[in-house]
Structures are given as C-alpha cells and as structure tokens.
Amino acid sequence: MTAGAPWFPPVGARSVFRKTVTESDVGLFAGITGDFAPQHVDDEYMRSRPQGRRIAHGVLTLGLTSTAAARLCEAHGVTAVSYGYDRVRFLRPVYLGETVTVDYVIERLDLAARKAFAAMTATTQDGERCLVGTHVLYCYPPEGDA
Image 1 (cartoon, rainbow, N blue to C red):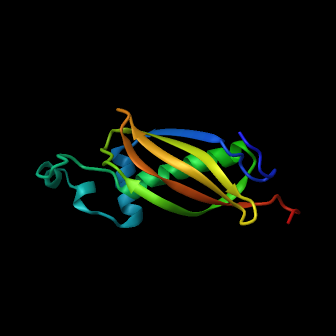
Image 2 (image 1 turned 90 degrees about the vertical axis):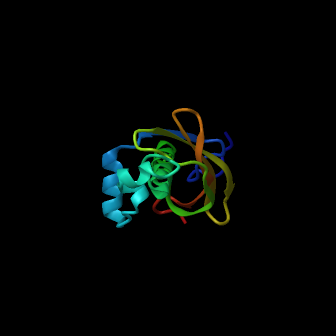
C-alpha cells in the first residue's frame, strides 16, 4: 500500500463486505424509497419474465458498497463522505437469497482535491460479477487541521 497523507486511505487499502440479500431487505428498501416496481415485489409477475423470480433493487446492491467504504475509512481513521460514483454498471440481477460480496479497493488519490478513488466490484456467491464501478470519497482532515 502507498501512503498519501495521514488523513487519506492508502492506495491499495481494501475492504470486503458480504451480505445475503433477504426478502426483508427488499421489502424495507421498497418502502423507504417508494420503488414498488413489480420486478422487486411481485412473485407472480416475475414468474412470467425471463428472470423467473424477483430481483433486488440495483441501488440496494450499490448501497452495500457504502458499507465497505465506511469500514475501510474506519479501519484507516479516515473521515470521508461520498462525493459520487462513476461508471457504475449492473452486470446481472441479484436475486433474493443470493449472497453478495463487495470488494472495495483504493486505486488512486487526488490530494489537492481531497479525493480518494476506489474500485468497487460486487460478486454473487457463484463468483459472477453483478456490479462494478468507481466510488469517489471526499476526505476531511482531522479537526484542527486545514
């Protein structure tokens, strides 16, 4: 790993987070966001579709990357907020009951702009990639530093 500044995560820092996506996760996410699209909440509808069963919201899957980011920042004593996501792609659906593993790796730093860039890859338990993208973190100096 390459050190950048004491209040940045080092290049090469990695966080892995794994979670099984449950019926409850999808139901609660639909309720929170108001996204009750049938591909997420209607078993009968999805039986007649190519997927054959309900799928998790893509943004729910993306949200799992936030946990990996938070854990990485905590492990390295970094205070950061999400500055955005670049080139996020949903490569395949995530079905209810599947386990998703997020691999989150800091690839580069822009010290002048106070940004860290992380590669995100999410895979299902069968090893298939379901999400890829880049997460941009805006890093804050410790209190009292400028």
